Length: 126
Image (cartoon, rainbow, N blue to C red; front, side, top):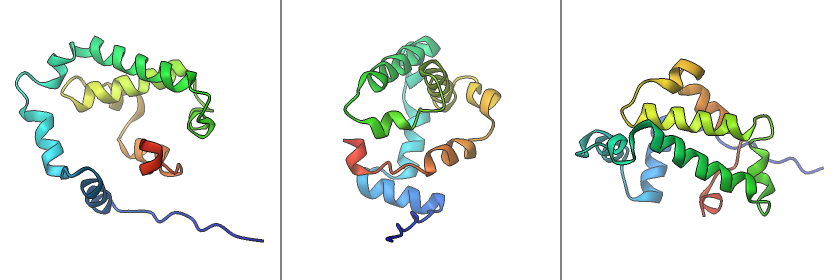
């Protein structure tokens, strides 16, 4: 019987470092980008309705893509509508709008925990 090793839990600083190594953009650079664009991304995308459209288009593709069942499995306990709404709320809050995600879901730690069990790596990002 072969036992698989549980993935190592990384601190947020280890995640920042790993993300920077893969993307070439540091955490502080990404945070600056959230606030330094003029006009801000929230305005550029069409305010909250733009993020609703972006989230809808993304999840329409995710739920239609039957070639990656592991990815669809992430959403086995939620509907497409719920996934769209959660991402929409997260984007609006992250990019300077009202705290819609926090109002519905609480702190971001739940978001991190929700994704922690999935092997979302470089291959999955492709």
